Amino acid sequence: MDALKQQTPEDTTRLTRQERYLREHASCPMCETDLKMNHDIDKNQNKVKEIAHCPECDLCARTTDHLLH
Image (cartoon, rainbow, N blue to C red; front, top):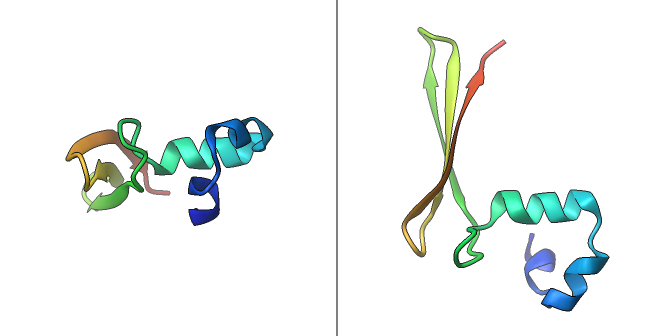
């Protein structure tokens, strides 16, 4: 992930779709700091709640529920 952060904005046009997705998914939309992921498991409802939080600007970037299989 550090290799993606070291690139300048001009270099982002050379990123593959997968690299761009990883950058957008793993970094804060406000300050581009790496997001911290928390996972809360609810075994009764067979769900995992994923919470992406920025430690720098204290922003909750995303909350997603996933079903356990």
